[in-house]
Image (cartoon, rainbow, N blue to C red; front, side):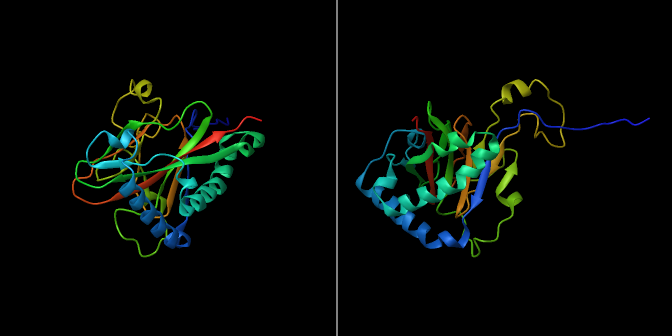
Length: 229
């Protein structure tokens, strides 16, 4: 007798990433300069990073103010399109989506963090985060091992990006010791790394863990909006 036993994950959440590597080394330096300048002339916007006194968040559309952000916007647009198509969107929808409204986030002291939140509403389909600087120096940005930077579970550490399973509350009804809880609502942790872009749907909730010492954590967020014809 032939018996088939198979495992197939259902209702998976889409996610993507891109490592821009050494190609963006100089652009990253300019992004940092432009973020620091913008902070020096603008108190910023009251959003998820402004719920404490050790963080700052710029106003959106930074791509209209700085050439570095304009270049980054084009890079994100190029990287995001195939990810969105792979997630199931019709090509016509993806072609009518535009990455825009880039904004910068900076945590600059111990205790700084970002509360759980999501990006955009209505016509915003996807979003994400780009890191022009990591929390540690990296001498070879082209060398990338996914398991070092994108990890299953809520990890300990400063300034980590934590992504939440939108069905976590329901999945938590099943609770026993797991070797891995990947299919039972476990979070995913992203370690900030220079030149790393992470991409996710606008509805995916996420947060940034607090810093425990005085240092700078830079990130850039954006919206990918659908433009109706």
